[in-house]
Structures are given as structure tokens and as C-alpha cells.
Image (tube, rainbow, N blue to C red; front, side, top):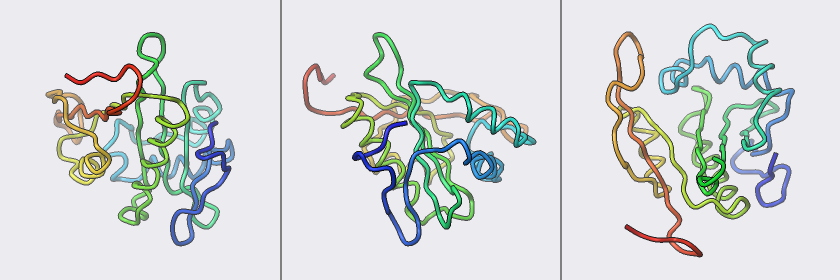
Length: 183
């Protein structure tokens, strides 16, 4: 697990800190995944179990990094970054989830900023890419704030509430340095 800026914990807002994910965080992580808005805006399925969460956190791949936001001893948000491999090892795929009760408090902004810092300044990544539902205006605004641009739209991508919905493919490119080119 990488630590942003070499710190194991970084105070970020009133009463909350960012830190690396720990195995004992599985219950809070599971609670976030079951939030109605998190489930609506991700590919999560309902009725996942605490045992599944514990098992999943026990097997995070080597190329994945997870940062969590903690408030009063509980994880209320998480961001992850999965680095691709081989000839795409310069690419990372980030994602964010914030508990429904803690949105609009700057936690998502802090988590995304920490993931971008980790990606660019510690892992040397040049491209970050993600998918976001086209109707998730808050997430799209957050990603745009950090320089992500829509590169395309996948139609009828996922089933949600009984209907198929579209996603945007968004990416953020570093603009300077060795090997950087522009189209």
C-alpha cells in the first residue's frame, strides 16, 4: 500500500484524515458499498455480504492502491487506483466511493487529489482513465475539476433500475515530461 507524500495519515478536513486501507476496515468498506447512491452510481449489486467484503479486501492485487477517508474512527470514503501492466503500465484506472451521509464535504475531492498525486508523483503514470454514468453530474463535475475529459460514450453499458444506461469514458493526461505527445 503506497502512502501519499510518505505519510501514513494526512489530516484533510474537519475531523477526517486520509490513510491507507487496512484489513480491519472491511465492515466500514462494506457499509459504503451498500449505500443507495453508491450502489446506483457503481456496478455494485445489492445484498453483498460482510464475508464477501472481508474476502475481497484480503485479496487486493499488487497493482492496486487504496486510500480511505476516516471520520471518528470509521471509513467513510475510499479511492483506489489500479495500474495497468505491460505496454499500458503508464495507465491507471481510479475510482471513488463516498458514504451517502458524507457527500459534499470535500472528501471525494481530497481522495481524487491524493490518487492523482500517487499516480503521477509516485508511480509515474501518464494517463488516468475511468467510466462514469452519463447522468452522474456530481462525479463528472469532480472529474472535470481535475482535468478529466470525456473521450467517448458507451451506449447501453449497464443495467440499473431495470433499464440500460450509458457511461462516459473520461481520461486525464499529464501534459509534460518524457515521452509525452499530443494529438
